[in-house]
Image 1 (cartoon, rainbow over the protein chains, first blue to last red):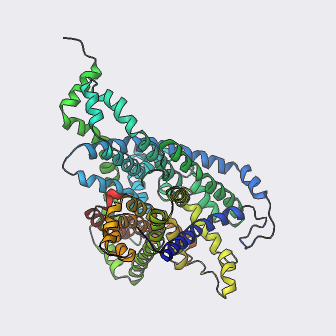
Image 2 (image 1 turned 60 degrees about the horizontal axis):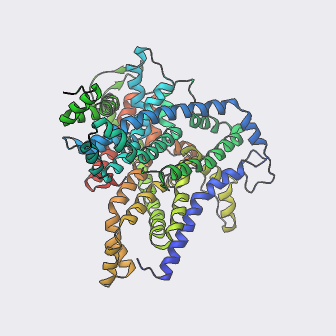
Image 3 (image 1 turned 90 degrees about the vertical axis):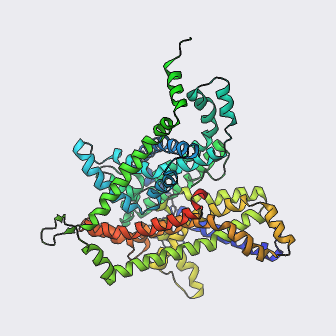
Length: 270
Length: 290
């Protein structure tokens, strides 16, 4: 579109303002983690790395991180299987209720986390607890999988819609059976979509707190739960700030991975 | 006849029966979503029709509408519902106001290379995490914090913790969710449509209004699913920066331990609004834009 010079300047200003809106609060957290004082007084008077060494000495943070990674890996693995199955069914077949499935899939992520959380909590305590499965990491993984399926589904379905059937037909013509064709032709074609969906699913799970509070037992502390619990404790604020700063810096990793593995700067579809 | 492996025989059976293939594909995900998720959800929503005995605090399994009556007639609840809706609409409007010019800049002004880098810059904070971002605003808005410092020369001070802080924080949290679909949709727009509009004498402003915006509608609706629904159900941001503000999510959370049926009845409000919103969004084809 041919825009006038002033329109371009206006859009450029909006972009700069928008990026500042996005990055100033995050930069603030990083700068604050080096603030020697425990208050949020701005501008900081003295800088030190004392909170960083305190944070690295806390075993609670490391355990919470480990729990989060375990929950994320479990939920991602389950969501990859379930989301891919659903994507193949919806894109490759025409059947009654097909349109409803995409709605059903997005429901767990669109409905308030607290509603999903309460519902799953009630269901787990009536179904799983009598079976001897208490609230813990396993129930957290089940809860997270429910809303992780949709991101895998969206990524794989979008790829499948663009995939021409000719390669698979050629494979069948050359004598490969259904599973061989899937393994050698279809799977490599959707691999980068699986990577993108898996990364997003892991990030969703890693970040989740509301459903987690309702599905985790008292002994299961994920990193977001640790942050939330310590947010309320004034003397812990500087340590929380260090954890937040690390998470902000670490957010570059998934974007980099998505770029490297799937050549996609965005890291998949939401 | 040559001997065939069991795998190949199974593949043959699957190949000849598309219905069987479909059933195999759908069985696991549908069991999960329909039985586990929808089942749990409906059991919870059904409990909205029960009541809690005010003396024994036990749940009485008698069908009645008293919880819904409370929500409709109690002005406190009406106020919470209206406030929550207002916040969700305000957040969506603010995010749209930010996202539209930013996406237009990325699609039409920036060079492709700069556009890729800046898009990554917009998306990266999406991965930083909900709590981290809510926490960042808590720090920024706190007394004597950076917002106080910035506004001081103008004789103003930070809005403090309250409804304004909630709207700011939620807009911040969901902004990338709006930019992404709008930008993707702009990128898929055929340049010939835009040049046709220009050839017919439309200035860029007019092209934007009559060609670009109507084409962007499904993408904007797709983005608003996130900004609107996620704001409607939020209860952590309001806990962190909301001060005394109560939203639907925090009201539900407050009732869970004391009066589960009332919490369930309250949950019906956002669920009903969001399901209607999603059904409307699906009609416009927005769900494929996600």
